[in-house]
Image (cartoon, rainbow, N blue to C red; front, side, top):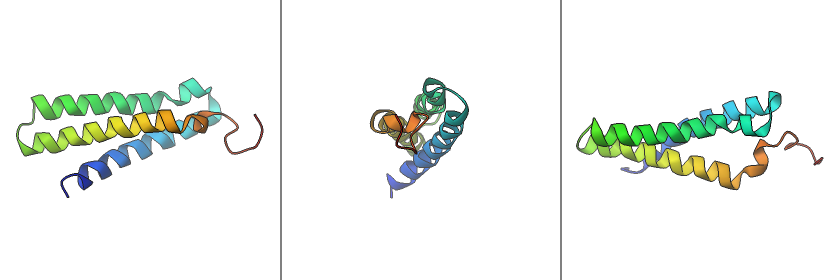
Length: 94
């Protein structure tokens, strides 16, 4: 239970970032579509800092875990779902 709740919060953050990037993909180039995922990774770093410096104790540890899971999921999206950001992902054209 200690790892499940932060993982679910981080997954919710990354789902929102991925939806924004899929919407941006329809109107802009792929590097611009990756900006929400980069912003979520930066927010994860900020969450880790906030959990370490401002919040102390177990609350800070849980908050830092949310940041760590956010960064890990963002990295996974950027590295393993590279083709997702191309304009013609849902078609067979290249």
